[in-house]
Image (cartoon, rainbow, N blue to C red; front, side, top):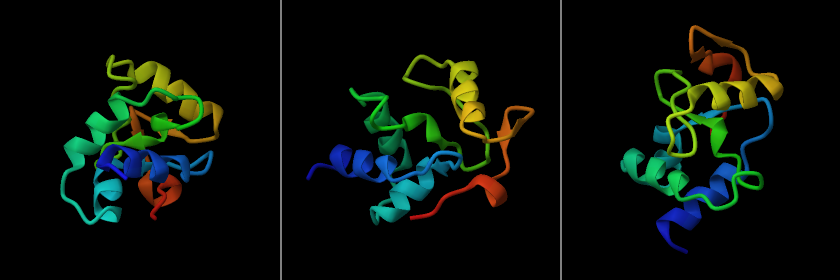
Length: 99
C-alpha cells in the first residue's frame, strides 16, 4: 500500500469521540513525515467514510479541515461526536487516541 493508503487505514480506526494527531499517525507508520500525513488527508476522497476531522495538531489545536481551512466545521463535527473544545483546543489527555 502507498503512504496515503496507510494513513487512511489508520484514520478509519479512530473511534467517534476521540482524536489523534498528524504526528501520532506518522509515528504509527514509522515515519516522521507528519506534514505528508496532512497532505494525504487533504486528498481524502471519502471524508464520510474516513473521518479526517478526527486528526488535529500535536498541540491540541483543532486546525483546518478538508484543505479549506474551515476549523469551525471541523470543531462542530468533533463536538457532535462528544469531543470538548475550549479555545480551539482539545485536551489530548482526555480525548487523544493512540494506535
